[in-house]
Length: 298
Image (cartoon, rainbow, N blue to C red; front, side, top):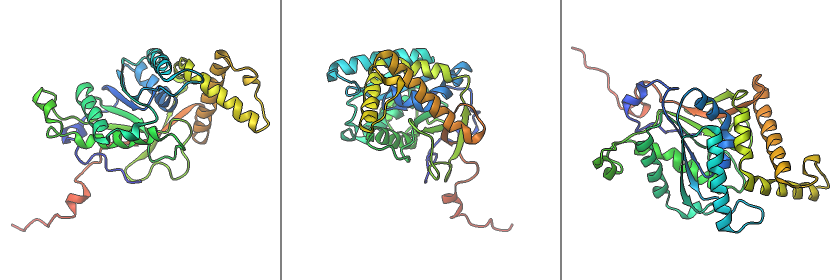
């Protein structure tokens, strides 16, 4: 797994301390970042760090029986409520059509993220890990791909119109790649420049669950689809004898509990989240050292 994220990060940022400054989350929708990183973000918020969310998709297709416009309005309102429960300071929703992000210029999406870097000046950035196989959810792939490339535009020569307005180049120091819906599998993380980071989310688990349960419209769709899959397999679940908002919320809790326990068990943690984690490399980059010549003797 090749990770060349920090080639253009300003050198001054490499000297900054981590764990103090703002956090920016780049995500296709509310569900992805809450499921993949909600417990870790809750811990950062509890420690006093401001967290901002840049949501790319409008979530117009994530409901059981509503039309696109009603679905978008419901999901966006519930996403805002979920963010407040988690403690997020602001959600900036760009409103691109979910499920169709492949039709949006990746340069346009990267410019959005670079502008958010300059405005929020995050020390830490979270975004989906597009190196992991996610099945049919291509929005996760598109958002993760372009978000990883965005720090290349950390210099002031990119988006010069922002530089002229006093918002000079900026790139974060620390990056968390998250897998929204399942633990990492062998050879999916910790390779190249990345290291695997496991976070104990025992303290942040309940805020994560409350935020996820606030996504009532998408949770109802999830519960109905789960019930249908079980029926096709000749199985049933006591949780889904009848699909209601209450049973959907119970299903969400059960899923997040199993996900956190499965992630933490191999590492001796009761409840955990894990990430491909990147910090700047120290020293002179290899591509510069390979052209170095011995210093002439005086």
